[in-house]
Length: 404
Image 1 (tube, rainbow, N blue to C red):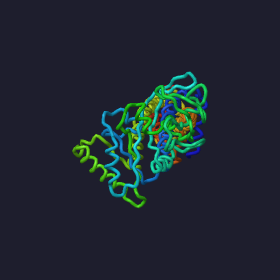
Image 2: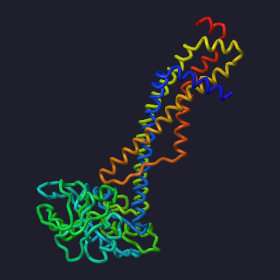
Image 3: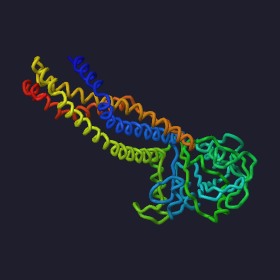
Image 4: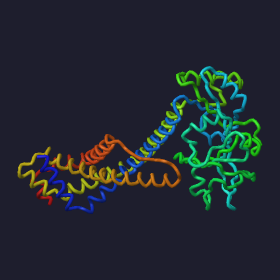
């Protein structure tokens, strides 16, 4: 019986190809947007998690301001971290190493071109260098990183050798930061985050001179002992910093976050964005559902005589109803299938665009989610066809044939 239903549905769809495709259009646009958005945001979540996992679980980040906005966001707050905070944190039990960096947006001159980019001042003592070099964001590809004894040397993020200037920078090149000459001693591997690939790293003391910031730090990276409880140490750091900076609990002008908390916060933000965007995309599914309902009502009117003949030959009302429900559901299913294919294609295009900006992004979507989307599109189609199907099932055979 089911086979007969689908056979009749496909024959009817073939007879009304143009109308069928226009009806399908409303469904596949919504499904396409949903699949593309879920794939891209899932890819972003995976990329973020992967990068932070490389840093290890024994890392804590302290940033200025009540909400952690990352390295670039540290420039948006009036609160400051200083060397005094470094001293306070280093005295917390379980803390193995503490590294402070100064990050500023600066004018960069090279090959008679001027751009504005991020410059990070980092300490160059051997212990601090071990911490920084151990971060996957700052791995060296060619040359070396800035080290103790360097004054006006720099190592570059991948973006500076991949299109930041008309002429790509290389080892030994001279350029200017805020009109001060620097020479390139190293080029870092592509981090794939966009942000870290766009940072020029120079010695901290030199950065403080050219930016006239003798005490300020943008972020502090804390490395804990391997077997220590990172969460407990983070709470201890908060407590000691509140006392040192004379602020009350809940009124902190700094943020302390473990690697797990940072990953969780970023993923939470992406999830909220995903829900909002998918919700907006779902509006087009409502429009598509209305289109299916309209098509099915028209189909009932056009096939009144056909329905009458089927009933005259013994077809029951529930069979007529099921036929129209399956037909409307099939329209939704076809739209969902096309939408999934196009959505994945758009996600792939998004990946290529991200790659062009130096951001590693591998969009993907689970099989369970895909089947869920297909089921949802079938449900949208079926629900939209309920009223027309009921109307068709209630037609009386003689009146239906006579109306034709």
